[in-house]
Length: 371
Image (cartoon, rainbow, N blue to C red; front, side):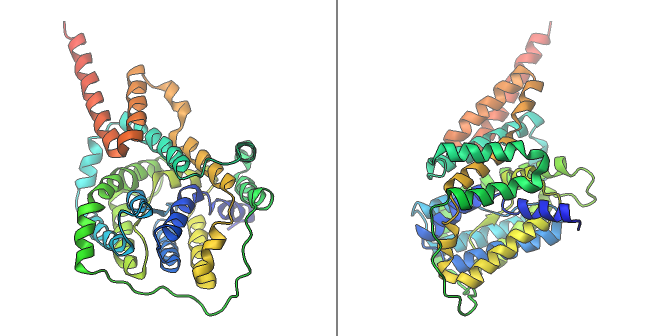
């Protein structure tokens, strides 16, 4: 790998911190999730993903289950049980045509609406948990740096992280006494945990996973890499995330998936291969192994301004707002409606509303065209 490409992939390795960091810190600090098992899970999943796809297909926390755990609605054992159940479900889905049939029912306008809805959801979620309630002068300065150096993406990612950490960061990492290597412990949930998982977390997360982690991620991946002989299809994404969740959850990993927002973030920073994901995964494993329980201090040392910039940067590239000027007014209406509905009812509700609007507008157009 050439030096320029290596630098680009290295700088893009942490492009998805805006989604990853707030949820992971919340799970560790508020939900009491073991940081060692959590980071090993992400690390192993990321390394497997990098080898399987050879593209910057990201690994992210499953947002619905993570939010429930942070809010105290489910405990660690239920979180692990949910990951195993979802993993088994995704493995089964990867052997069927169900996701492909669902995708065929979604016209391009709705897919663009889902991208815009997800982008706005990322921003509002970040604001809700306090990420975007930061010093806006510093955040905007870093955002301008990132946008101005888009043509030199190999440097923009490094500039954002390095400047943010050194100049804006006021957190201090305590001197960690590096001792024995920390390893994850096997945790197998009891039967009651699986029952609670089915009642509380399974269905809401499955709906979000089908739309964002499978269908939308596959659409964007094939848009970014149209010449791949083995593209990131819905079935392949279901298989990789299914195996990861089912096998890694007993090690303490939380429910994980691929994500459209993360893919847009890595691609925007210039990543084109799986190296950026491999670097991210290796970093997760090293942090867990070397710092153990003290890894929380390292994660919380990244300034919120940096995280806020990464959220905004990824959201812009995910939504691609300039494309809105090239679509019909009726399509603009549908996209705007889906974006607003997603703030209230989530992506699945936005998709249902989009389908209803698309059908209604189509019927109205047909009636007007009929003499």
